[in-house]
Amino acid sequence: MDKRRSTSAYVFFLANSPISWSTKRQRTVATSSCESEYIGQCNATKEAVWLRLLLSEVGYPQQGPMLINADNKSAIAIAANPEYHARTKHIDIQYHYVREKADDGTVRFSYIPTARMAADGLTKALERVKFDRWVTLVYNGSVARPTE
Image 1 (spheres, rainbow, N blue to C red):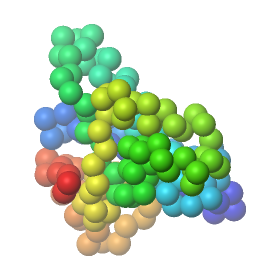
Image 2 (image 1 turned 180 degrees about the vertical axis):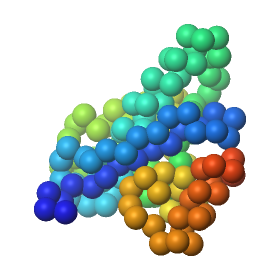
Image 3 (image 1 turned 90 degrees about the vertical axis):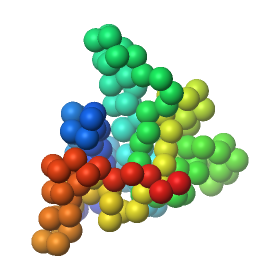
Image 4 (image 1 turned 30 degrees about the horizontal axis):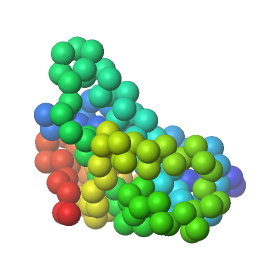
């Protein structure tokens, strides 16, 4: 609480089963929720790239981009459109790795409402109803689908 750093989390699924997940306090203080989400997208993108390589090495090369669901439309727009550059000058350059991987087709971001976000339970305490919904999303194979 004293450091004011956000928490990033992701969950990757294969055949509706979680295979990789992480919850990590961000290294820097984000100046907006958009920046915090963009940093989280960067962490998820790095894991997606690693998972693509792993799957390829074990004989399952991926065709097309890996889908990453995100619940912040502004962060998705920054990854997709370099015209937002003037609004993102304060974001550390290392996080623009997200944009590079979106441009080269390695990953694709899709908006999903927070209530259907599978990583939600990894970032904060949830009230009972939301926790039960999260358990259903993660453990019963009903992973949220994008709403595009």
